[in-house]
Image 1: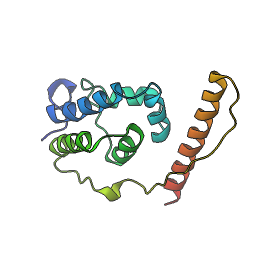
Image 2: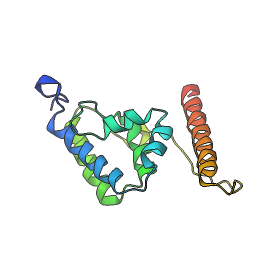
Image 3: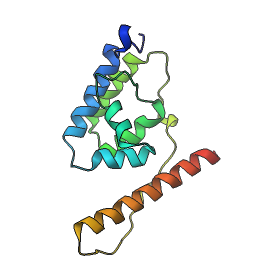
Length: 140
């Protein structure tokens, strides 16, 4: 199946998996889109484009695992997404090994007593982790 329909519209398959991502994001806490942008090393507008079924921008295969992790896809959501993704990109291999290996660590940071300042610290830590991951990918 072609990824692009005539006149720059996404194919039905691309729109299908983007619809799944949009539903998942709409059902997650606020800030999930920003955390996803940081984890992908992209701007928030990129997340908006890949989650909007009317935009033709496909989701790169290397981002799929990160999307699953950050957005906490359920098994059913993951299955539905992957089925639509494989239909839309039949020639593209999407294997578990496509995404870089990652591990989860937990850190303890001080409570600054102010929601705005605490959020700023959270964002700094997430940005640092995203930059570290990009550095590791560049070295590989």
